[in-house]
Image (tube, one colour):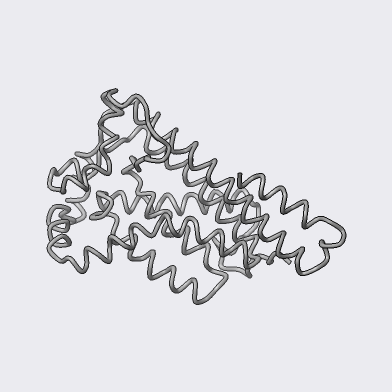
Length: 269
């Protein structure tokens, strides 16, 4: 549907009587947003299915090693989880920040496209797609059930958010619904990588960038307790973002604003 809308808008914008007008500019921007939305929906559905299929390979879990690394870093996940749950106000703020990921995934490309920041939108999509592919390549051989399951201290509601993981590994889940997919990757934390991608995507607006820094800083802080991640998952998520940015820099063959802090990409005129 989005692809059809995008095609129709592009055809309208290319009409000789509209192309050079302000309406033509608006149609082109709407078409860009619709094309981006269609691409995101298709790609995320494919990657969601791939993540489920890779879990069924069921290599040995690495939870023990991740928990040991957390201890080496001085991070006591059970204590942190208990402290956050004992402070409802903090827990609520962290929950909102963690849940904002989906809203940002929808709103950032819409805002960026409608305001003519085509280069930033392309960069955003490239970051999302490459990071997601790298995420699955890393997670497939090193799966983890996550801290919720490993420590056995989380609430039933928290554990239910990753219930498909065990069901896929033991073969009891044979059919899944695209509308009810769960995030089953613990290492690296994709919420952490996404938070940094969201910040990067908002560099073209000073206010938006500052808001993105605050919101996504909270999102990163929320990942251990609201996403059931080990601290090393969060560190690995930062590494995933850095690897993605570095690879895109290498592929582009030039110094991009994302890597080098140079001048902003050109807007969509």
